Structures are given as structure tokens and as C-alpha cells.
Length: 156
Image (cartoon, rainbow, N blue to C red):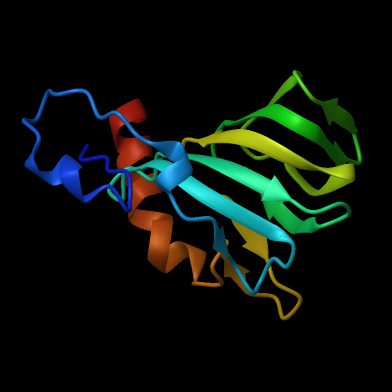
């Protein structure tokens, strides 16, 4: 694994086993045209494995479209609430979803700020039938090799 925190250039000069302290407020909020009303701050990302930790800020009613959690996903709500067909996760609550779970989710009436932890990025199901990642890239091309590595490590 070779995890990074994007937008933290000082990390590149640190020794391999040094702690990476992150000034979260200095990280940019990144929007995604495919998901209006949703912004993210990436705290940790490993391209090889797909490991991803991020802050997710959702405007009231902003919706994450139909997606599958390829591996375990964890969300801790810091402000507001996260709503899906199974229930509502409010400020201070935590929800985790098993590999293979599929749903839509949206920011509650006050919006939502959550800490999301993913073993590998979600698989989204586009209206045109394509399977894509959050940025609209072909999921298999972007993340298939990471999933294969995970399965090979797990099953030998």
C-alpha cells in the first residue's frame, strides 16, 4: 500500500513510517458534477488497494444515486443526517454497510456532514446501464484490479 492525502505536498518528503498529520481545514472541498450538492475532502487514499477515507458534505436533499458498496463501507455522521430507504443516521450516529449492499442515500433536512471510510470505492449504476465510479469513470477499468488484489489476498 502507498496511501496519500491529496493536497498535502509536505507528506512526500516524510520518511515511510512517519505519521501524516493533516490540517483538514486546509484541504479543498471538491465538487462533482455527477453528484450535485455533494462535496468531499479526501483524507486518505490508496490507489492500489482502493482504500478511501473522506469527509462528505451533502446539501439538504442532495442524493447519492443508486450504488453498491463493493466491500464494507462505514459512515459516522458529524452533523445533520444521512437518509436511505432503511432509515436515518443522525448526528453522532454510525452506520456500516456490508459488501454487496445497494441503495440510494441523501442528505437530511439540515444536510449532512459525515466521515466515510471505504475499503474500495462504490460502484454506481448509471441510467444508461453503465457501471461507473463516483466520477463517472468505468468502474471495472478504474477499480477492478484493486478488487482482484483484495480477493487474491483474501482467498489466496
